Amino acid sequence: MCTADEETRTAGRSRDLADAELHSMGLSRRRILQSAGILAAGTAASAAMARPAAANPGGNDPQLTWLVGDHHVHTQYSHDAKYLIKQQLDAAASYGVDWLALTEHSNFGHANNGGAVNSNKEIQAQRAARPDLLIFQGLEWYIPGAEHASVLVAPGPNEVNLLRTFELVWDGKLNQWEKPAPGTAQVETFERKAVEAIAWLAEQRRSGYIDDVVALANHPLRLGIDSPHELRAWRDAAREVMIGMEGAPGAQGSGVSQFARAGDQRGEYTNNPTQFSFPGYPADAFRPYGGFDWATATVGGVWDSMLAEGLPFWITANSDNHLTVKDTWKTGPYPAEEPYLSLPNEFDRWSVTGKRPDPYDAGEKQGGSDYWPGQFSRLHTGVTERSYTGVLDAMRQGRMWVDHGHLLQGLEVRVREARGNGNGRNGVTLGSRLNVRRGADVEISITITTTDYRNFAGVLPKLAHVDVIGGPVTGPAADRDMMRAPETTVWKQIDVSGRIGTFTISHVLKDVQESCYFRLRGSDGNRHGAGYYGTAVDPAGPLRHGNNLGDADPWSDTWFYANPVFIDVA
Image (cartoon, rainbow, N blue to C red; front, side, top):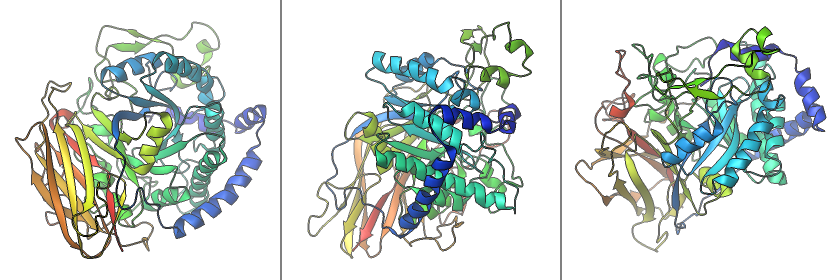
């Protein structure tokens, strides 16, 4: 993750640098902004009125292949990371990853000084050498007035130009659209820029300039500056592009790192509210719960308040790998020549070419909060074809579940009408919508495969319970800053302790009278208690870690979360 003050020094540079680079690419900022402004207004209006598209409504979803992915990984082409592209790919392959996205930070060094172009050359070579590993070139976007986002682009002849143009025109840091002064016109201006940026990405997809693109908000509650109304605005700007948020941040090893201190938390979630934070968030929201973001982990909270609108908004997990916990690799020295010798700090030296020197093995443990891709956090995507567009479509459709510590080896969910006209014979799966008759019974079938190997902490993961969480669909929120779904609760907790191998459990919703949704969650059972809104809502939810050294050991408190299924009553 990027938090250093030196990273923001680039905000003081003139935007003339970006405009000159755009001119060299044959582009005009004015024309791009004008077209996006028109597009954003039209997109937001239509999104607010349109009924969400149903993914295979009624049933008969295709058979899926589940691929493990990581949408948020950094290399030496980010100013605060150190690994070669090859090192990240080698590690990902060794930990069972099928696809990953290299999402370097937006910066002038990346956009202007060769970082994006040169990294693409390396990525192209690695794609040719590793046909079994899908390698996206993406970007970590600084959302205007807000946190960061992962932007993933399908490979093609325009992928680099798309990323560089987006970075130069729409990045909050490069364009000095960060930290708007509360109560000023900056707030509305910066929020509008974010919506226009997402709409612009959608237009590039619709026009065929790129084959596909998705974006999702990173570590949304780390600083508390992603307000509920902004999350909704990004979603509604282009639902086919802005698909959701990280349910669990990367940096899961920050509490057990080489230089861990008492009070360190998973995800580097150790901040407190500031004048830039959304005032509705309590101080508790700035801490992780079982390693997951408060917005996701709280039953009846921010995520559920958005799902209760009946609109798709999915969650993911990722490594956000910059510096791996207790590894022995160290960034090499910059050349002992100009301009490096005259530059005052690491960030400026990195910016010369948008790339840090190659790392070397120093033979002693280094600092770092991250795990390698696939080592601890995993994103499982259900694809109908093993391809770049297949992965992005699976993400867009919400066919995703996540786990920590390799808690599960497999998860299959099918939802069907239990009796009557045979609607949904094969059932629908995660991210889908099931159309049923009023008064019908609905069967939720959950097939689990437990993990039969020790994870990378030497622990044989054991699933203790599966929670079915759900609530009614109540329609669009009158208050765009709504962050409660008061009718969403844990419907049922199913004890599966001691069960191993592949087995199926089920839960039947009797006499369904109103449209609703449900989602799944489960854990190793090591650490849980009353949820944030009490036992009546969540009797055995994830808890905050304590403030003692070692309390935030991620391997001793592992969970899985699955994206929802919507049930529409006719």
